[in-house]
Image (cartoon, rainbow, N blue to C red; front, side, top):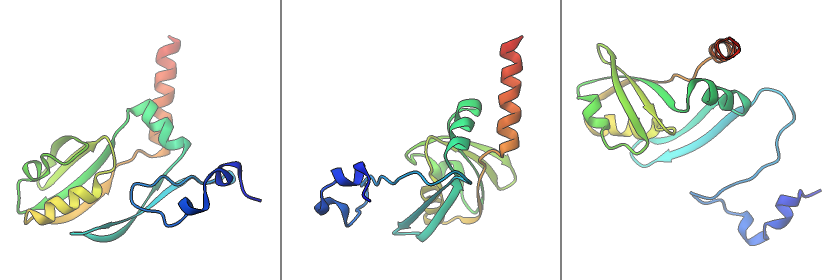
Length: 149
């Protein structure tokens, strides 16, 4: 049986889904929540993005602050300089020899990888630093204790 949302969408707008389109889908039954995306970047190729989704992401943003932290390991270029101007990028901080912590207001992994490679750098690691469930809950309960005092 079609949902009220799908009934309100005219058949001509259901397919094909184009870049920038918004797709609505019924919520899956309870269980592990993931966000999955597929991108195709001209200079980088196709890739799949998989990460935690739903309530965990919302709670992490409330407790730890919104943002998409990454660990970038690269060589052969000035990484901070190469990443200057990437839309959504908020901060690039050196983390040691050949490593930088990148924080953005959205997922910039594709743009970061493309910018480093197109600038002549060797990208050796690009890791999502989303917090673990333990980190989120530890921080949440620290804040609760502080507010209760």
